[in-house]
Amino acid sequence: QFINMGVSELTMAVVSMGLMLHGGLIAACGTFFVFSDYMKPAIRLCALMELPVKFVWTHDAFRVGEDGPTHQPIEQEAQIRLMEKLRNHSGNNSMLVLRP
Image (cartoon, rainbow, N blue to C red; front, side, top):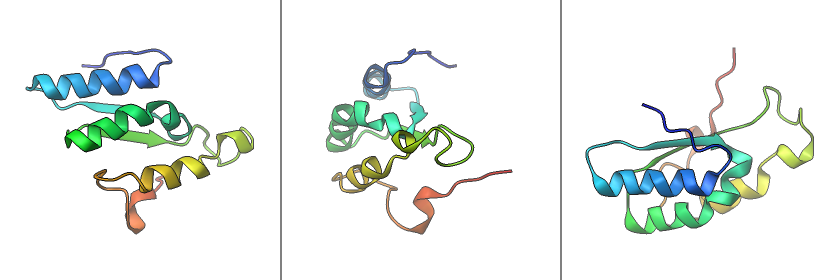
C-alpha cells in the first residue's frame, strides 16, 4: 500500500519512522534527492535511532541539469554522506543511476 503525503517531505519521513517504530511494516520513503534538505532532521533522528527506514532518492529530471542548476543536488549529497550512522551511502555503487 502507498500513503500519499503530498508535497511534504518532512511529514513523509516522520510518518515512515512512526510506521517502523510501531512495527509489522517495512517503511520506504521516496522523493527527489534535491528535496532531501527538507527531510534532514527526520533522517538524522532516524539514523541515531537506527531505524531501518528505506529512503529512496532520485533526480527529478531524465537528463541531469534539465531543470537548471537548482535541481542538481551537489551540496545535499555531501551532507547526506557525512551523516553519522546512515548506512549504504558510501562506495561506488551508492549513486548508480539506471537509464533506458
